[in-house]
Length: 401
Ligand SMILES: Cc1cc2nc3c(=O)[nH]c(=O)nc-3n(C[C@H](O)[C@H](O)[C@H](O)COP(=O)(O)OP(=O)(O)OC[C@H]3O[C@@H](n4cnc5c(N)ncnc54)[C@H](O)[C@@H]3O)c2cc1C
Image (cartoon, rainbow, N blue to C red; front, side, top):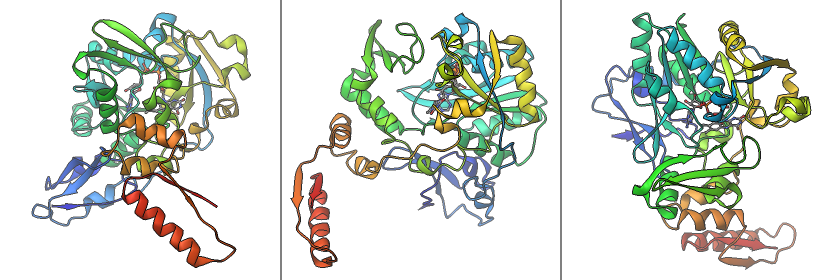
């Protein structure tokens, strides 16, 4: 077996799903992300995996300056969704029309996977943001089978997953509609599991809600709700190491920092996210129950907009600039933290709490004082050598000039 190492691989799994020889499996790397592994004995060297890889062959065919809307579903729908409830509005419509919906659900033990379903109960499980990378499994293939059987599909996911689906299908299906979320980057499932193990009794967790609205509503600081033993444990986001690391870009996949898809022009028919800057558009639009930003990226997006127009409580066209100002991830990927690599180097050596704390609090085990004058390369190299040596000994080291 030979690992195909591509530092920009998003783990979308298009190559795995497409390989005619079934020579590719998705395996977990040291950081806990899935990446393709090619079985040389089965590989026929047809090259299809590289030909369709969306990272190697990115496609940009949507509007570079999409129309932008602020949208809200009814209060009861928004209560169970992370933002303005755009996802459930569209998903319910597709179910009513006899279609299918694909999205991310919790999988045991506390990982996230993509499923495709025509059952309302499954749509309910897809609701809510789960801030870790979801596993695609065979969802692309199942989507294709359903599309070829003539049923319509609403496929939702991160921009790289939409790019992966399009790459796998290599065809515009009339009955396929795509929705992507604005994406801050997807953390590793291994980090999330480790964090849960360290901070809770894993077997006792019944639900983990990254975005509950029950206590403070929407947009009023991060509050996590972890249901253990039938009781809600509320955790302030600024005290939670996973939440802090996620927002700092410390635990996202390597490719996320330079994502080729979370930017304009976008990948899906429509893009949905939080309308964080809504107060600057008009304070009256913010009832603190959640409001979404929606970008209409192409003609099919307009069909989805019509569905929202007839099912939402509030829908208003606004300048895209007003949404970008407070949500730059609409137009560009979130940069990974400069010490992301150090975090992952230490992932199996220290606890997540300690690992995150050391980096974000700028703690270190050792200070190296170095005296050098301009162009004293010998001193600089000695310093670098000692720093590497200390880090090999698992000591986080800072250099003071
Ligand atoms: C990892 C991640 C990062 C995000 N970053 C931003 C951001 O920087 N800015 C911003 O405005 N919005 C971001 N969002 C999107 C936002 O949190 C909401 O998910 C989105 O606005 C939809 O809300 P809703 O109320 O319409 O739908 P909900 O009813 O809350 O439905 C959630 C939707 O998100 C999908 N989803 C949930 N978890 C995942 C996952 N792990 N992988 C793929 N799809 C998933 C579900 O399938 C469903 O389509 C992010 C979401 C995720 C999962």
